[in-house]
Length: 401
Image 1 (cartoon, rainbow, N blue to C red):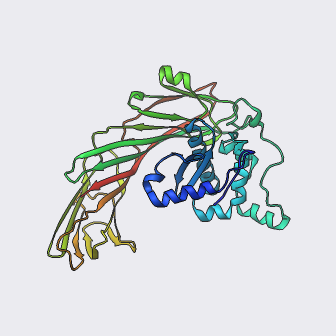
Image 2 (cartoon, rainbow, N blue to C red):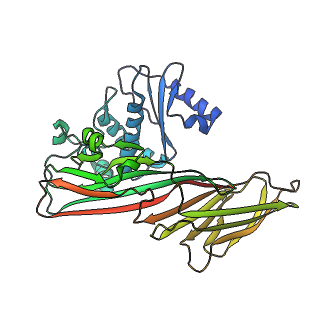
């Protein structure tokens, strides 16, 4: 556990014991609550890649500020360390503490932009680790503050210059869906992000508009976005940070269809369960659907499994997870998984049915239907390169049997 006291009033570590006692006793239902009221504190929690980020306060405050700050901390650490897991944080705990020192001051968020933090604290690499061993100086903090820290645009470095001015916009979407045992669509929604990679000289002022912004249900913006143009005309007006950043995130609810269908059939008697699963294209998105996978957890009462497929590979992992890697749907046949599950001796029929988790990826299309209309730049340089891409992949895509 890494602990950082951010104000003069020291918080006792016993609050962490209280938190973990409730996590153990209540399980996932407790961990899904972003705001928790303990007898002495308000707690905010965010879970990323198995790492729990926990903040606490004894006074009333906007809960979204605490949650948003923890999300920023997780994003910055993931960006700095190339991912989030226990070993990476242990190996770089000095940088973690240095980042927290700069990101918050006396309990108030301060510098949370990754590109500005990179100018203040060097990201870890082999060269910096060797130098720290040779010189005995383990600090990565720069001696001078970046110019942007005193600017009214703190997310952008001061007057960067590029020979080639480029800006690229990516629509990245994840589809969450639940399909019941009758094949009916219970829930289907898309969580998406607009990611921008900007390498523009000077102080650019960009305007991004969508062809159909009315389909957006929930939106969340980077601090660089001016809210008034969006509120009045649903246009994104902003001065971008330098480099890669997430301009906005959105959610689109109540979609009517999914690109794939999964038809599981499980019949059991006489101590055996016969399995047959079909996977195919329900609605052709116009682009190739690849990286198709299907996973399900074998029930505890299963002693052994004999499963085969007519396309792709099937593996039974050590934790009783069956993984079927399909790849792409062939044109000449429908991929099917079939086989037999052997039940425990005292069981005649299977009473616990698995849930199938589906994965896929579609390059070049946003399944939500969101379309970028245009990207304009005031006082455009003589040579400006613009590019747009779209990607949709499966999020929490479940088929119940």
